[in-house]
Length: 151
Image 1 (cartoon, one colour):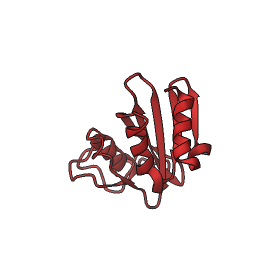
Image 2 (tube, rainbow, N blue to C red; image 1 turned 90 degrees about the vertical axis):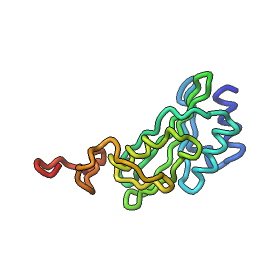
Image 3 (cartoon, rainbow, N blue to C red; image 1 turned 90 degrees about the horizontal axis):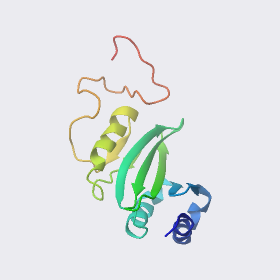
């Protein structure tokens, strides 16, 4: 299936994604999805469209929101980048470790570096920041500033 066919199949199932889905270039699809539809869309992309390889999850501070971009791939090399944003004042994502066990470390990065919460992520060590890193200090947030002696 080529990029346009993939987008057509996705938007036929989820018409509300028409405005937020685009083919950036050959083998690269980008899609923004509302938080309330994220899991249903993710399941469809993995199960029906075949993007069953999680390459990474990128966390971003978009100002008023915290975003997570799930970079998914098919065996042939095509990439599907699925982005979900949550409010910065209540940044809660659902874990995807039930589908992709390898997502655990990426989800821990989003917690440590951006201050998000990931529901359903089992308890574990911090990553990548050290256990002694001060609580409430999220170095990838745009409004974070380094204060000597604080961290």
